[in-house]
Length: 426
Image 1: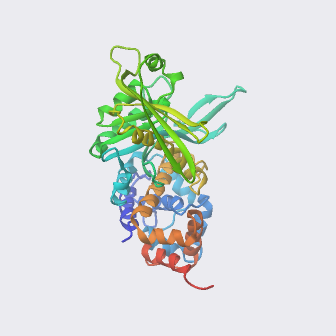
Image 2: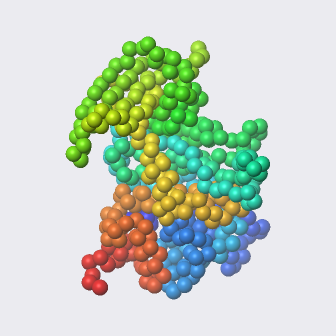
Image 3: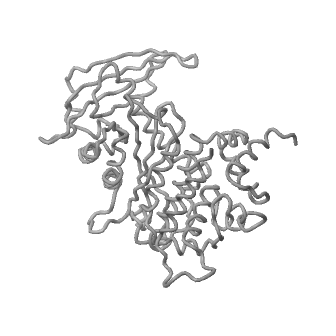
């Protein structure tokens, strides 16, 4: 059974509850907030390159009927009206839908590592920059020529697993000016807010938070532990002098593993030590440090990195810990790269607005990605349709084209039609 109808129905309820900027009761013929929110979401779900192109495609041919059957739209607002009405909405209103997408994905056993734990990678990314366009939610920086650049950024979180190509995105936390703050917001502060808001609700999944060297600090480690989680963070010697000094002269334990993959022989060397201070202070969190070094058949180093964790490290789990730590890159490769280069057009300015529009649209874009991920994991008809098209990008090209000319009763009807097309002769 398709998971999409239920997810879209819940999205409609959330959109119906968004604040309506119109004064007085809604008059006959005016668009409901549910239609406005779903119309914006449908742009990202269909991976349309622009607001205007998508709006015209919906209004052409039989597109409007498919909007009713697939997205539950009673009417199709114009692109300008969508921007006007969504500017001021709270991006956090959609947070619960990310959790629902994870639940809709079904059994998450393939994501479990380290005796049933879930890995959550955290990282920041920009999605807008301009010298001219800006709003109160913009961050700023001074460029080399003396000019000011405005930009938007957010902290992303994704469920990841080594050896698993799929990721499941979680709610974002936007890096934006905070009330009462003297300094400009930053990625670390956004990470602490994210852990405070979402960490307690994820504690039952026994999360292990993954992050780059920026997160390997006392405040982020303490925040991860305070919400019931553990951590594995990249730890570069150059930026962690206390740990680097602690390692000098220390007796490191070592494990070597040889492997042959695709005809190539490699040797992985793991080293570790327990109970190292994360910083030079009496209240420093004690961490376990470990590293991995990979050599090719000629003994040449092809990869090396080091990490800190509050999980125990021994010969029985150090290899798995290293694999989990390296899965942090999946938020770069399977999240940001997909969002920016594989049809989601994350860095395209769909609308900036004067208040929260840019953040709301990015949230809807991430939510479309989450719905797609849930469908890929839980919906056989979706996987068959994608496989019939040969690639995800071509699948969405088929999706946008076929819905202009053919009316479908529901999502299963549409997905079966796309999958069956590969079996019919030309």
